[in-house]
Image 1 (cartoon, rainbow, N blue to C red):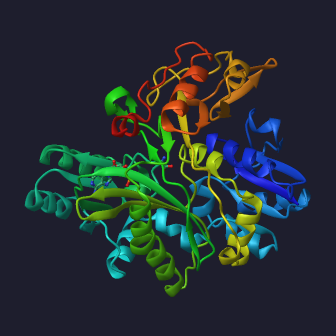
Image 2: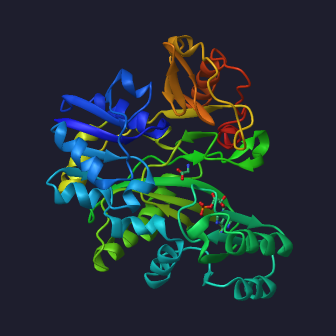
Length: 424
Ligand code: AMP
Ligand code: GLY
């Protein structure tokens, strides 16, 4: 089979790396891909992945049998619908199903309608009414832009003033553009967070191994929010019992609800969960693989990813066995100095081979090739991933690997997986 991955980050490198291991994969393409993906795939640049016609054309030109979509924006644009209409199999939700991520108001309304546990909330279209809600409810309280905001449209306000400021930023100063024309205001939930991704064909739901992301930039969960500075899997808070509860109370009901609403959801469904005193509750749904969750989840998958994805597309997921390793995986993100604010690009990177030599996988997230040398080209530059029979050994191996890699002003968190280590 000829397979094409859409996207260019660490998540997509991990997807390509795993797909390439399948005996079914004859040729692998990446659009646009990155220098790391070029080791396992043919990268095709110059295609606008937000232009559905362009994506269909490049798939046809290369005789593609299966397209795997990484990022949320092409999904929200309906790239899966366009590929399907052209007779090309595509792994990922349709445009109407991807609204589960694309509109927080839609997602919350679905959860309310179908009794899926989540924080209480209200949806607001004007700032004055939103402010009145904050005045009544008090803090802590959570303010969210409705639309896609690259993970940045959420403010957990510890004071009423912070909440007012968030409303002003989102609604009046349009910090997230159109994404902020509606607001969701939510009850604050206390607990430990975990991510539970699942494969689904629209009927059957198969949870993957659980994971936990570290969203703050600095050690001790301090500093600004980022796209994610590291992950580990499995998350100890997601005991087998908790995974079963989340599957029965959240994943299966939302997939059934989407089918009932005429928006069958196929692909990877990502549930961001808060494990509260009364059980798992939804923080958010994403319509795609998590980044950097994928970097620790897929290395623990022992099944054939091509078979699983085809079963999701074809509606035969109930017939596929999905075995997981009982080991652990850790991903530490090596970032550019200054990230998540302004940072420089183009610094030469050394030591990737040395990190691989100590047994790490190095996935590229923001790199480029300049004069034959790998250089930095993003905020999150590399994802250093280690697997081992247990979490301690995986942490040690990942840090042994990341210490070998250098570029100017590089930084990384030293405490990835601390919650899991503390529990042991
Ligand atoms: P989201 O983009 O919806 O996942 O929100 C980003 C982050 O904000 C989450 O990972 C949580 O840490 C936090 N958050 C979102 N909603 C809530 C909530 N209702 N209660 C507490 N924390 C929240
Ligand atoms: N790691 C968070 C996300 O992918 O949305």
